[in-house]
Image (tube, rainbow, N blue to C red; front, side, top):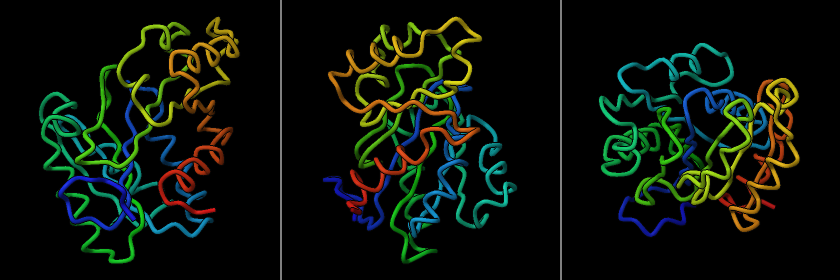
Length: 211
């Protein structure tokens, strides 16, 4: 059940997944879908794009999830707006999915790609993940962007690329943990599945309160 103190009358927990363009947000969702399904979680997805529905169509075509369980929001402007300043469109999309699927436990909201300043309103989500990737540079944690610092879970994706882009992965992860004061950091390769079970563990224990 949702733990938010906001006014929205939702039953399903709501999780945000944000991060810069190309960090692997959609790939993370694609990797999580079969894991959450195996765990018996009843969930749906809302994607956010600037002026298209490309991410939603990608998920619908994937064969991983019932296409009716994927909704799309077109921000039409700065992606921050519809997840932080005025999340009305996303709240409505989540409400519509809950109405369509009464047993829904969880709604994942994928943010439109943006920079390290992207954060989620707690009127929209109960808990949120921020995704960065090693190809973006090992200095990302040191920049201490609000997304990196404030998220409930930081995911460092594309760890397989570290030796190819001159990143010392252990040092990058240690720096991420330092700037976050020891709050959770998980290293992943969404394409191969590395770390995905750990992300699902975090979701089910912190948000759904499953053992």
